[in-house]
Picture 1 (tube, rainbow, N blue to C red):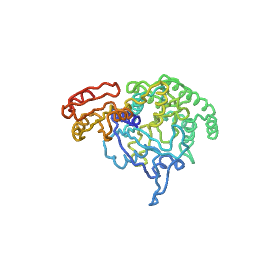
Picture 2 (cartoon, helix red, strand yellow):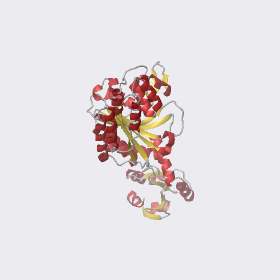
Picture 3 (cartoon, rainbow, N blue to C red):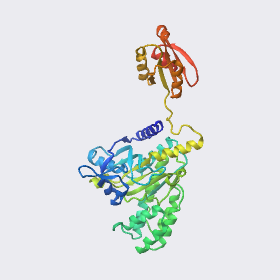
Picture 4 (tube, one colour):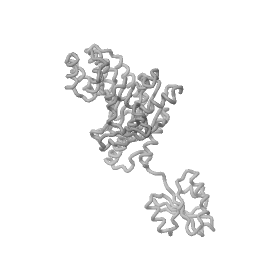
Length: 424
């Protein structure tokens, strides 16, 4: 828990530094909140149930939709844009394996009521800043733009309407998975020239930073597709260079679609190779969800979710490989002090204990009443840094002994909080 609390505090501090403020939503939500967002097929992945009043409820599987509901119910009149962050437990009914738990924690952020490349850059910058601050190494940011894919697919003649799934949505899912055979079959079924698959494959193989956009423009020109979405992505990447630390790897991947219909513009993912098949630790982008609550004027919004448990697993693996004992900056507990009254009335030191605590020291009062040797041994085994020893003669002389259990040094100081604090 020292590690988890340090990580949560680190993320919260970075969010606050970017102007994002914490909100909280219930663990229980109505089932229709998630079927409206992701379709009825999502139910099999949820802990859904009927409560005693026969209401269809579920444990929340993620936090974006609950935050959207909260905005619609509680923050309609709040000044926009909103910069909101959140952290909490989520639940998914699926096979549990390393890095993918049925109960997991998610940290995230949403920028609501502003759109465009600069707003998107602010969100991506926060995500990179968080990963940089926690010391994660060798991660790769993959960034794309769903608008580019939609322009291509609609330009090829695919429809955004259809049952059970629109052809554009089907193509987006196939592109996100890299299923080229499936995409070829879909194109053939919709009378799209087979050369389109080759052009999209060339687009997916572009591997680099902002410089790859020129090659992408060439491919779009060949297909007769507008460059507007590419220009937006270029503006985002330029802003990101100034707003965020430089990540270990940033790749433009124009076939990242995130596999979800509600994304509309920039999309991005962060992967850590050493986690293997569960290597994605963060993902997000620009999306439209607030229209479901009658707030069309606030769409699109932009945000991301960070897999708290997965990032910790990656950090632990990297720390073990490097031989570091500290995994997350700040996880090492603050020095602890044991106040040890020996053969004296403990009430004589209670005021000093309070004063030391008020000054910010972590102080525990010994309640065991054992001899000094056993008490020092117990304090050493339980992680105390210092022991303040107060015996009958110390009460008479107005002095006490402060022993540092790490260095072995022992000092005699005045029996007052100021003198004791000076050597802790």
